[in-house]
Image 1: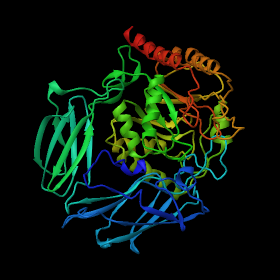
Image 2 (image 1 turned 180 degrees about the vertical axis):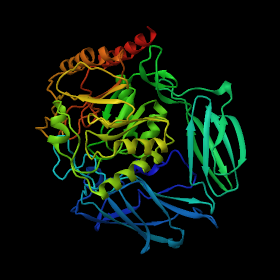
Image 3 (image 1 turned 90 degrees about the vertical axis):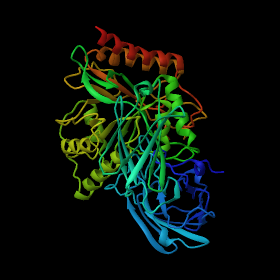
Image 4 (image 1 turned 45 degrees about the vertical axis):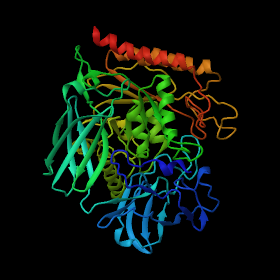
Length: 554
């Protein structure tokens, strides 16, 4: 059984009617392929050629009783890179542009009794006007194997004529504001904590948010150390969905000494983060099983990290669900598009050459980025683990930073925003974001909280666990567990901890695991070897957290 077949793809809006198509007999250009893995990945089992145009087919028969009289059937595609046109039984269902976000269609009128033929025609020319992240036709170093076509689950669900299209959950420390998107006249909501129902309310749907206050005796705040989640059932008309939420807030506010801090639930928190590329040797964009995400989160928590910076990639929703359940903060990057220049976007700024990004961007390129950014914020809104968004990374595709900052804050003001991670700081952003590699610098935080949003990246090769025998890309060489751990300890001692009292709010170490030829991970690419001393790593990160505590207690 394919583990992706049994993983519910949308944990924030669950229904009983769920029919996965991952185990259907899929073909790509006439050759068998294991779904939902991209054809470039070993896990897909695909043996055919991979061109710019990909034609998928799958035959399926709905189980008896799946769709009752008067119900509608919705088809969902988790993600397909880059363009996708979907048809069912020879008739058009939906067309989508952009390779990282889900899309769906009502296919009720296209279904036939008995066997159905689903076809997906994808086009992926690695068009740089569309989001493409770290994908490259010539992978090597910091660029990785590209993926094409479908790379997330395809599934069906049955819904009433008037169904719940979505929920919007905005938490604080005492309750939530809940919006229910449905054409039904009324809804009823039941909230449970640890399996016990703690409140039930009903109201007429008006299109406006409804305030739900949690009884004081049942208020428990979500933190990385205690990730408490409340289950919620929403019924509107004939439709019922299951979801969940947490009580938590994220803000930037002064501490008792007037220093601006990132605060979780009103208290300053030091973000001990690690860069998470989200690449895996078996499935490239996917682990072999959804549990692979949970295992990565557990590995980083065991080392003492409390934040993952999800780097220029949007994951299947099971990743964010794992972070919610296990207590891992997430800083979510937008997926970059547009031209990239190693000299102008990386090399010169790394050595301190300051200027305004000037690589030309087409109107089409800007439009795609802006639309994807808005959809990303809306798509991930309900996941409590997400505390921040990165809009641009190192000047790559950067434009209109101030305008996009206000645009996205208008959609979601409940997180903080790093408009330009690394350099090319705009006039308006929530953090002063720096990338420092190759040397430890003395940091000088200013009025804004400073975030060391990339650093370290020390390479260490582990023979027998390399993507290629000669893989060596990284930012400084270490040969042993002791050397790598000592390099990280020195970086924290010389650069991180001395700047915390003045306003350094967090650090993002590069990176969670090796990725292909890039061997600067804390784990090997196959996740079989941890390359640092785990106990010493926990002590290093705890020292940073203790430094913040001592600074705010003065």
